[in-house]
Amino acid sequence: MRAATFLGDGVIRIDDKAVPVLREGETAVDVLACALCGSELRVFRQGWPVTPGHEIVGRVNHPGHKLNGRRVLVYMPIWCGTCDMCLSGNEHLCSADLGLVGWQRDGGYAERVNVPDQCLLEVPDDIPTHLAPLLLDTIATAGHGIRLARRIVERGHLLVIGAGPIGLGTVLTAQAMGLADIHVAEIKPKRRALAVRFGAVALADDVTGFTHRDRFPLVFETTGSHAGRQRALELTAPLGVCVFLGESNTWEISENKPIRRKDFFIARSFYFPRSDYAANIELLRSDMSRYAELVDAQVPLPALNELFAAFAAGDRIKPQCSFVEQG
Image (cartoon, rainbow, N blue to C red; front, side, top):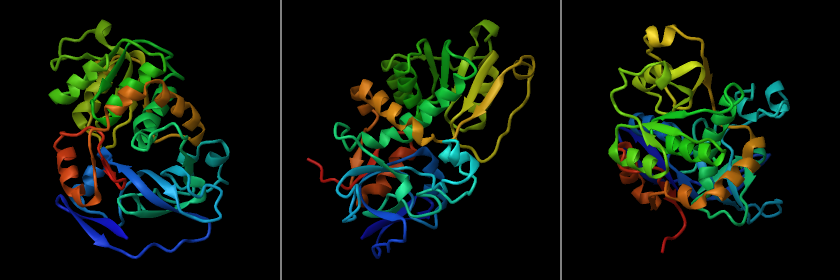
C-alpha cells in the first residue's frame, strides 16, 4: 500500500509499505479521506516516526465484522474502557494513555489503517464522505469546548480568536447551538472574510482601547499562539470564561492589569467524548452547506506535500487528502 512519510523541513515522501497486520481487537479500514489539521504543521516541519493523519473517514474492509463495508470515522484517542475517565463517559481523557491514532500509531495518510474496534464511529448514509471528517476536530472539538464553556456562562456575546479550521468551526457550531453576536479576530484577510460571510463581526486589530464593556463573557482561543492567548485572557470579561482550543507547546503570558484585575475562568478543552457524536451529527445536518465551504481542496496522496505547503501558508482552510477518485 502507499503511505506518506513525513521527513521534516516540509518534505513528505510517498512510500510503498506492507499492508499492516491486524492485531486482536483491530479492524482494517480503507481510507477514503483524511483531513489536514493545524496541529500537524509541526509534524510537517519536524518530521514524525509514524504515518500521521487523525481526521479519517474510511470504509471497513473486514469480512465478518458487523460494520464490514460501512463508512466509519476514526476516533483518535485509544481508550481502555476500564479507568474512571472511560467509565464516566470521558473516553477522550482515558487515564491509560494508550496513544492517539496518527500520533503514536499509524494514521490516515495511507491507503489503509488498522483501528481498534472501539475507535470506530459509523457514518450515517446521508452524510457525504468529504464532509464526514468535519464531525471530528472541526465540529466536535469546537462543540465540546462550547459545551464546557456553557457550564459556566450560558450565553452572551462571544469572541473567537483565529479563523482557521477550528476557529471557523467554532463560529458555525456556536451559531448552530443557538449562540449569536459572534466576533472574530483574524489577521489573514481570506479567513477573516469567510468568518464575516458566516455572520461573525471582525474585531479591529487594535484592541488597546478596550474597556470592561467591550470584553466578552465567552472567549475561544483557537490559534495556540502566545499573542492569541494573551489577547484572549485580556478580552475575557469579568466572570467570563476563556477556552483554549488551540494547541501550544509553551505558554508565555504577561499577567498585566487587564488579566489581573478580574475574576474569570480558564478552560482547556481536548477533543470530545463519544457521547457527543450523535448531537454533532445533528449540528452538521443543520447547516451542511456552510460547513461544506470549509472543505476547500481534495487532492490525491501524491499531491499531499504541495497541499501541506499551501495549508501552512494559510491558503487553505480544511483541505483533504482524498483516496476517492475525483470527477
